Length: 504
Image 1 (cartoon, rainbow, N blue to C red):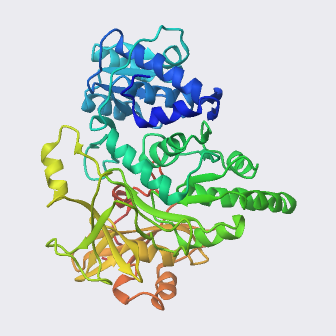
Image 2: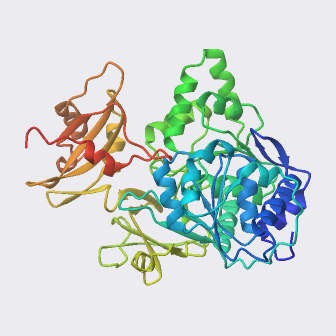
Image 3: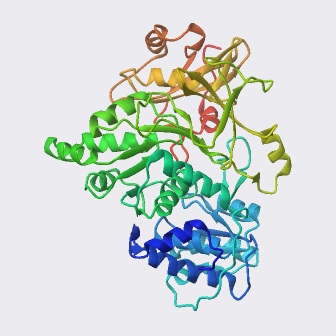
């Protein structure tokens, strides 16, 4: 590596014989990763001194090739643009074109889907295996300033076309240092990765944190609940991070085991040192049931693509159900009202964040970038309340906060209660435009087996806990809720599924 290589790669150079990545391609040491990084970086440079922040878009499944191409892009001075393996061709094309990718890389199984866009843009389509495992001679890699732009991650686009969120090397390093300190990462750790790698959760929180700390990362090619349970209970894994949907599926897989097997899995799960839930609100029933299954109280945290992780329950200490803890080190956070004025404890307000791990810009969208900040604070659009020293997320300002009859209703609060109803397996609550109420509260429900919940039953059930204005005014039974790759319910899409209120 060049003398100016990133701290992430310099740290790896001190652990060349240690296992770095275990994946479907095999087991690879940090030395293997360093060598592959130099091969990829040299190939991308192709005799030029520096990619100078050229965008490198790549469609590669989770594994060693992914890590090597990510690091090789960075080592050559490029900006990495990870493409989602779950995206259809039009969405892949959008990301490639919006980012202005100068290089496109695909694993063999994905070449066919990217060939048309590569041809239309006049770009060669590089082969991931050839880059990573080829025998190309390596050359000098450029010196890198941490202030350089390193990564573009595309948001979900729930309120319009997806925007590219730009992270610098310095912001990535800041985030990794924060999480390493807060969550106790050590070289002896081995993380099991089952998350997609085009989001902060999998890419930064798991893969990059593991490699930064000279720890191993075992990557499954795709999530399978049975396989994940088996690996988690093997004694080889110490860290696991997932979304609530995955924990729900793990619980179901555990419940389908025989009694002896369940006991063995539970004993194995108890040996892990850290289990984290994030990317979507963690329903309390899942938290409670997982504790019964594994012995672990899941560590819930709060973050988003633009800010990384900002709030976390403690690694050591009391974790509060339904809350996301306190600000992480170096993170400044405040709650403000609609006028941007900080609110007192106990009063809901929008979360605003500033700190070294906040993103730098929306790619090629200066107006959107300017609108996202207020006096140097990033406006998250999420509403929270500070109670007893910890923060509780109430929902998205535009999606999860419903204004009905002049009152504000937290959709997440209603959802948490409805999930405790014996006839409800899962649910999501949205606000639908209503002439009388402004928005009416609508519950979309996935019923449990052989259950037939109705609106009056649910309203009666919830009435003892919720104020009358928070009660659902319409009930829709669905087979499943629309979700994105991280398990979040896509509420704009759900709203499109809601039929007119028959009683309106």
